[in-house]
Image (cartoon, rainbow, N blue to C red; front, side):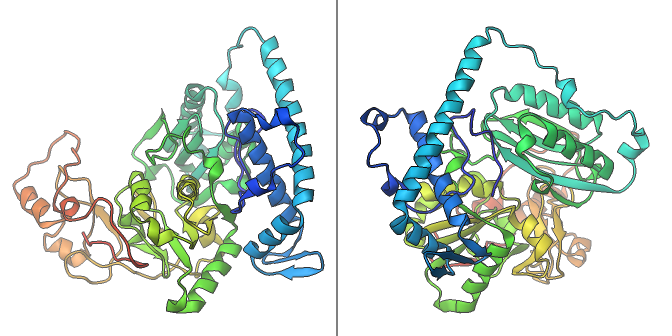
Length: 476
């Protein structure tokens, strides 16, 4: 199950296993009349309890990864055991939910009382959250084998500025570089340094009073180091992943059902075995086009969008594509699927919505030669990492197999370009003819690039409308 924030202290409580079924049909029939008029927050708590109870009940019937036994019957589809439990055990679910809800309310009341008794907020010393490095030499933090961490944790943060200050101090002490986003909804980051430093960072995160819900396996690792980032950037934002939808309006707690890499692999295998005859399932890549261009799952739907903030509009303009379908979503490390699947589920058009837990990163750890082919795009100076030798993309100029990105050579443009070694030697180093022409007479400048749009963006629709799976993105 996905680990998130402290459910006892937040309005947006996390649901470890969101079930794609109308749990409102399991509403308590004999709930006291005064409890029927719950506040919005308490309704959210009760909904969480129903979903959590349902998920736990289903999990208790699991015999193996893809087999469940209940009432003398054997179920080999997750949707089948869900329907059986909903129809046959609604009374059991109701009783368990009510008991869980009462325990939760009791805990909330205790915490409220405790907060009222505290008249002043004691200042927090962030130094207590920073590990002792007196036994570590500066050389161990600066030299030696390195790695890059990818992490996120959805949890309610009452003081994101405090967490931001702690993260900045922690990374600086451990000589880590990278990017960390903090918001009231949690934390998202990728940092690089020596393995000694990243090990201390993981230990500090897992021992923090808020982030101790995280485990070591929640941190995705890859070969690299501090050199993979230009500097360290830590800041407070509205969202920890920029989708452009207010977290208060669409909570991560509405996300789709998480599938372990083994479960996701079996789902993709079943999808591929049906070939073109499969019209009830969509394997959805919710990353940007330049990511899916160099690596993707076989037979996926890869929207031709430039950034994740376009994803909601893409869903809105392609609702018929998802109507009555089972959707299998994936992204780099899982965080975009949390909000993306929640948005898709909020449209009430899909039959089921699932997401790959831990993203492509975790999938490749177990299935390096699985159904994901090509490279995995990463947001640092490496641009991509690989687990197999497949090259699924082409040079922008000669169409030869090529998947090594470089920035457009024109100063004013920040776009990525696939230009093979031969073409680059021939002077084709820009992302498009317009940039190539503008860049010929350009002199080096110390001013930062302005991200000016060029032919590459002008020729691509902002929000594509897809009528079939696996649309090919416009090359650049």
